[in-house]
Amino acid sequence: MRSQPFPGFPAKSSLTPLPELFFSRLLPETDSLTELKVVLHVFWRLYQKKDTPKFITYDELVSDKTLMEGLDATAVVPEVLRDALHSAISRGVLLHTVLEGISQSQDVYFVNSESSRKAISEIESGHLSIPALSQSQPYRTKEAPNIFTLYEQNIGLLTPMIAEELKEAEELYPAAWIEEAFGEAVALNKRSWRYIARILERWSIEGKGSGKSGRDIKKKRGPERYLGGKYGHLVRH
Image 1 (tube, rainbow, N blue to C red):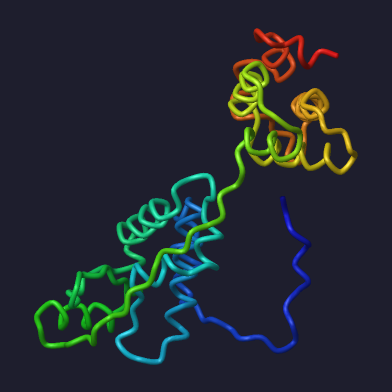
Image 2 (image 1 turned 30 degrees about the horizontal axis):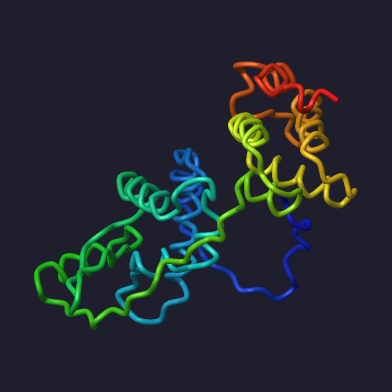
């Protein structure tokens, strides 16, 4: 769910400069929102660094709460980050090299500039030494409860018949819809799966937010798919 609208920038706020070519050349070519988020985050983090050469490690990125929570929460986030970095390197926005540490090597990333290319060349040739790099633990986003957990926490004991219906609903509707439907039912003190199912059916028919229905909605409309199962009688009344 979307949080409160952004209140606007304060009168005095820090700025992060970006090269003009970023807007005229790279932005029109970048079709991945995840890649764009990662690249902008790298520019922001590097601008705050004082030492030279300026680079950022994979450990720094994967442990960054701001970045990791902004990436796709429906996937394995470290893999999403790796894919975005690889895409940015292939596009020529970022440069990559590996620094050998005391215990293990580390992937490091630079913005593709003349000074960065020179620094990488000197590092790889052994003419530039980089101090030992610290290691950080990956930031782990809080996992959203699945439909079975939501049922047990808000309604009660899970039975095999209900479990089958929950499994069908989980395949049909987005996880965010399911969690919000449970929340709406609890707020109205309507703690029953039949009531929650009807909320989801209504959203599927009438649309919710962008109007998009569930993940599998093209195969069959919500009520038809949902009420046609073996246990459809549980939610008809």
